[in-house]
Structure formats: structure tokens, C-alpha cells
Length: 360
Image (cartoon, rainbow, N blue to C red):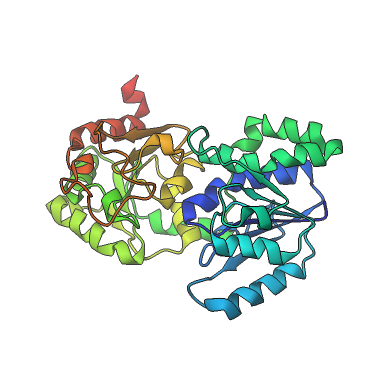
């Protein structure tokens, strides 16, 4: 193996969950050049990742939009002369990229578009049986048969917890900026809040987030509010419900103000990260940060829940889950999966992570 391509141009969380796969590849084939193809805008997050030779952003909605941009990207990939192409995405565009990139060995999911044509080996995704990290690692199964001289090393890596836990390595300037932004906080643990999500039905209520943030401030904790630029209204709503507590020196609103690497560095410094089911949730637990995650339209069984010292707060309803990603509005018109979650229940879980010694 001289050159390996891993293609996962899905959302932020999907890319982070690919890190264990990359770590296994680097462990088994330490001399290989590994290129990671990600969604446009995500490349800076992985720019310091030691396993990777290149991080290549496919900006399919921006500078590489349309057929011309796609073919330009494929030609560049073909010039790399990959020995192995691992396709972790199911779309037609991803399968066509795999076919045209010219790798000697191409592996993808059986459920992907044109899988019979795109891949030399197509593995079942086993969506109802495996969690997402394990579904991604399953792409390596054909290599156990085809790379027999490396089978023992591959088996060892796939059973080594130190290899399988994601390890996100961030650029040093991102850590320096995170320290600068948090320098003004008074002593106390830090709670990170992420009230946004791409899908509206994945967002817990602003009143709920405000309740927890206010309790945290009154209990002597610091609170950092995070959001993407298009989610700033969600943070404004939280601050509105917080009232005077939002004006405390213990509250820092960084919504829409950080790059992705700085966001990840900031999250690595909090003692608890309260979040909806979203991409930044994976930035937290992958860095060993305790997580309190609010799940509404999605459920743990889909395989994308946070690991480690994490809690998923949810309620049982016959209509859950209503989809893999959620919806713009509740299909049942009641939105009980979020509205019925008790803010005090959430605060008790968050408090146990901010002050673990009090829970003993």
C-alpha cells in the first residue's frame, strides 16, 4: 500500500467518526500516504491530523459546483494513483468518483448507488446492527482476505481501544486562540452550550437551554454559547430567556465568531458540553469531553450517539425516531420529543459533570 484515499464528504460528525478508520490504516500501513476527502469547509479541522498526507475538500456546493468542478477533482484524484479507495458515502456522486479515480482496489457499501459497478468489494452497512464507527471499520473487512500478510496487524489494530478512539489533532494556533478567548473567565468549571442544529426538529427548546445555563451561572460555573453563523438566532433566544444571567461575566457568547478548528479547541476545554444531536457533539466526546446530548427525532439505536462519559437525554414516544436526520417540522405536529424533556433533569446531569466530586 503506497497511497490510500478515504472518501467521506458527508457532514461534520460523519467526518469525525471516520478518524478511527484513519488511525487503523496508519497503524497497519505506516508508510502509506493517506488522503482524506471531506466536505467543503471541513479541511482546516483535520489539517494537523498526523495520519494524513493530504486533506482534500470537495466543495460541491461552492467552488467545485457542477460537472466541471467534479471532473476537475476526479482528475486530480486520478493523478495520485491510489492503491486503495475507501468510500464511506452512499451517494451517486461518490460512487462515480470512486469509479473514475482509478484506484487498483475500491471498497464501498453494498447499499451505495451503483455499488456493483463502483466497487471491487461491496460490504453490507448493517445499519440496524452496528454503530457508525463500526460501520466505517467494516470497510476494512475485504482487506483481511486480500492483504494476507497484513491480516494479523489489521486484526490487532481493530481490537486495540487505543487505536479505535478518535484522536483529533488541532493546529497550535487554534489552541492559542481558545486560551485567549477564555482568559477572562473567573475561576470555575466551564459549560459549553450548543443550541443549534442543521435540522430544526433536532433543536431542544431555547427555554430549556436557558434554564440550564442560568442554573450553571448561579452555581458558579462559566458558560460559553456556541453556534454556527446561521444559528445565531438560536443563541439570541437562549440569552433572552436567561434574562439578567445572560449579562454575567461568566457568560461568553461566541456564536458565529470562531473557525471550526478554534471551535474544537474551545470545546476541548469545557467540563461539560450540552448539545443537540449535531456535528459539534462529536467534536466533544472524541476529545474526551463529557457530553449531555438531547435527542428528539433521533435515537441511540441509529448509531451516532456520543461515547465516553456521555449521557443521551431523551423520552420514549412511539413516533421516535421519525428519521435519520430529523425534519424541518414535527411530522406529528406536537414536537413532544423535545418539549417534554424536563430542563431540571438535564441540569442535574450537567451538574454531575461540572462538579463530579459532588456526585460521589
